[in-house]
Length: 388
Image (cartoon, rainbow, N blue to C red; front, side, top):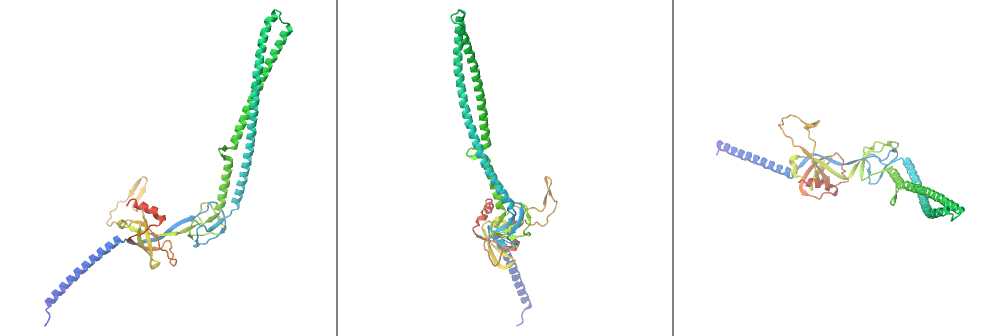
């Protein structure tokens, strides 16, 4: 029996419609599934491996006499990198030590001078007290002789006493007055000597520069010695942590200036990926989430990581500062591009056969599982959480 052409056409149309609807439904379902995965597990290929870089610069100036590293070498914490000529700083230290000994000797000498000044003050004060006592004694005799003379003069007028007695009384009184004046002059001289000796004692005390239990003169000399010791120690430059030497372009004989960077160290303690995520994905990313990191240089190798922080700012590319006012261009944006913010992911797994290098291209996927954040990254993670 021959097939009916109309029936076959209708059947094909029906099958075509069913297949079309199935394709559309599968596309919508797949799109929704992919959309959900992208927001549940945000991923990006705009990522790069990074590490902390520290420039190595000397604390003192001088000529490099020994260089113990080469470019791209791995160094351990405390390992000697290079040595600056220590001879000028050793001489400076020796001089500072000699000046310290001189300061100590000067202080001892000044203390001896002060002791002598104190003894002189005590002796002169003793003499001054004796002079004052002598004045009081002579003044008492002078009062007695004055009264005696006053009594004799009326009697001499009546000739109850002889002229010799009156002349002797006057002579004794005159001698007493002279002795009293001489005693006062001596007391004044001794008082002036006491004041001068006290001034010398205070001057000696100030030269000693003693403040409580601390002698400022000696401590200043000791501080100079400590500074010289520190400068001598700075002649040997050591690695502050485990790292790789990079950008080393110098040899022995180069004159290094204090603060001038000679090369850099790549910190090998912490490696991380900086993934630039669109702002639409940031709601799905939190510090502490686990992340998968794949590197272009090591296909198929998965590095496990954890999100430690999300950047709080980036530089706008359409706003410029002109004087005190922002310069905003007049544009009509038909297509709005989402801004990207760096997300820092600490690499937890290290593979000695696949070493990490700064600048390697990475693909990052943030998972919905959580991991403990390394201790060194807790501070930045807390900063991200405080506004969540």
